[in-house]
Each structure stands twice: as structure tokens, then as C-alpha cells.
Length: 108
Image (cartoon, rainbow, N blue to C red):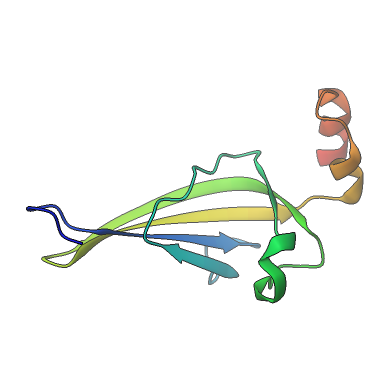
């Protein structure tokens, strides 16, 4: 809904599992902003159900985040977040986050 001169914003998050050079593996769109993504965050895709096209794992680590903004004059503003993720091994998933040395070894 347009308020005064302000344009509505459309939000999108695109997940990439190899590189930003390929097409997104999975995307979500919303009329409301998504919470920010940070490098090192983990994402659990288990609740995505049948829509989850990512490899056979439930947990992913965010490796890189890119923001893209654009405006369609007189129509809307777009905000897309590209999130590059990598599968997290079951060993890493089971290690306590309070043990940073073990996490370093498993990520290497």
C-alpha cells in the first residue's frame, strides 16, 4: 500500500548452495522484511517441507550475504538478500558452540 510519496517494498531472500554465479536454489518472498542473515548463522531447512530443494541435510551455515536494492519508478522498491549456504556436517551440528576450538577443527 502506497502511503504519501513512499513506495511499498517487496522483500525476497534467495538461497544459493554453490555460488552467487548460479541461479538461486530456493527463494522466499514476503511483504514484510526478513530478519537479518549474518555470516556464521545456521539455518534449519527442516520446516521447508517439500519445497526444500537443498542437499540431504537440514542444517546450513551462512557463508556470505549480499543485498540488492532496486526501484521500479512509481511502483515499488525491491530488497533482495542473497544468502550463500553450505551444508553443516552432523559432527559440527552436534558439537557444543561453547567449544570454539572443536568448531574450528570441524570447519577446516
